[in-house]
Length: 337
Ligand SMILES: [Ca+2]
Ligand SMILES: [Ca+2]
Ligand SMILES: [Ca+2]
Image (cartoon, rainbow, N blue to C red):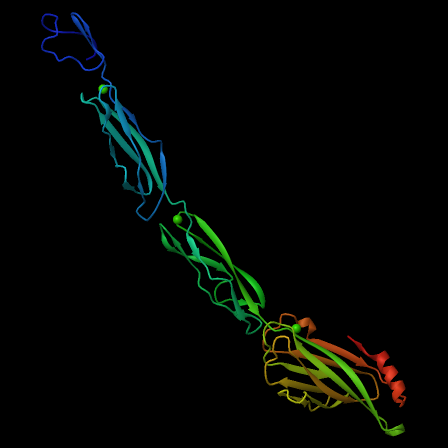
């Protein structure tokens, strides 16, 4: 009851406790103020990041102030500091004054996973090439605070064949809430880069009908790549003319073999040709005409630049036996393809 209230008895105030708060003596009537419960102060809706599979510990502050009692205790459920599960939970808070006037207030706590997994990717790596494509394996993983280990998808996949050069691996992972993270690393495959060039010299022996011209092609193989070249071979063709032989310089381990047809010669280096190193083989052809010597080099070590692995050199010989004229014609005829 509140407002104006008729009191029993003599119109006095006996038998009734003096009201707390702003009451006043109204003579035969006692003014009883309306009940004023405490004023509750609770947080606005809270959104919390999940810190684990169970949700998140969320703390908050709720206070109540009563017009008569001042600050009064507040009871909330779930309490501040409780672990809130995923999703939205309504927190209900109550506070009462000494007259049991009670206030109730609510707010929500929403727990969500808003953080993507943490990726663990390989450091940038450099490997020696072993072929046209070099298989490269690596380990990539991802861990999410809420979901634990989650799958990682990478392109190119571990174990794929990588070409000589630098390839970027792209990886990504998502947690069960759809939060994604991506990362990258590089795989550098080293290779060799053989290059071949050649020069020719003419040797004239004899006179008249006994004149013999021998062309000596000096074929230089250079490795411009960062990786030593293994299994270096050089195939030289001067068809239809016949080779009389071919050699590496003294001290170079390798050999040259003239094909049974005589129109081709194959030279093989025994040891790898190091980065920046070069070696020159000489092959001899006897002819009186135009000859085009084609040299082609290869290695078992990958060579990403095939365009410089072939050299073609044409030599045109005149019929004059004079060495001086032959030399001038040699100069005119010397050109590289
Ligand atoms: Ca009150
Ligand atoms: Ca997450
Ligand atoms: Ca090359």
